[in-house]
Length: 267
Image 1 (spheres, rainbow, N blue to C red):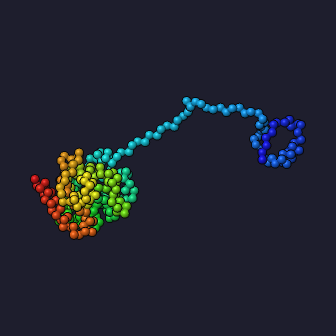
Image 2: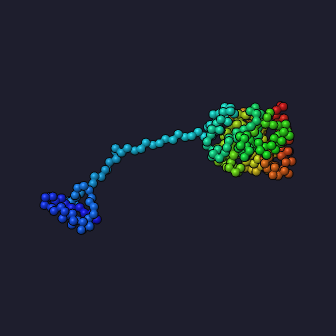
Image 3: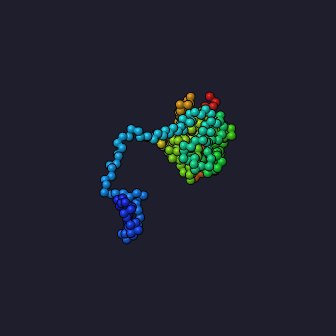
């Protein structure tokens, strides 16, 4: 309980008796250093009606980050493009990957092979198609006189391993695609071989499945190319390992692919 009282001349008050009276009445604390007469009206509060001098916080301007398309177009060589991809943080896949898997093969190759995404072995070594399916791809290419050591360039449509080897999402592919497109423009291959459905549907901008797209010739066009590039799709080696009866169809595709390559390079 607290009590306020009006000021009274100290000389007329028996202070010990007044203190005992307050204690008996239940007063156990005082409020403020000075007594307050509660019977006197307080002055009306002053209300601020003008905000002319109010200081508003300065707005924060965030500079827009360069897109993958803008970064890719500024690259003139494959080495510059590789460095740009390795330093690019716009794709969330990079946060889960061990290494960036850019490409493997010859920078002056006439044949470009584009797959889907790195797997566990590729993530560990930083090179595309080095696992079990990669060894099968090497044998497939060798059957028509191609290999990454002399005349073939190999990459994927995304540069980081998706968690659990899942398929890359549409957003992840869109973020990486400008780098892939710029790779094609800089390499300027004579022909392109797409392995697997995601690679085929992405590069060809065609939603059909691989069974409908494989074995046929298409043309890949891009502003940075002087002419369209003949492009064919076939089964992914990982699929062929699971479905060996389809190897005969992949073999047919490779024979047609090699025939087209020979006709271009010898003309």
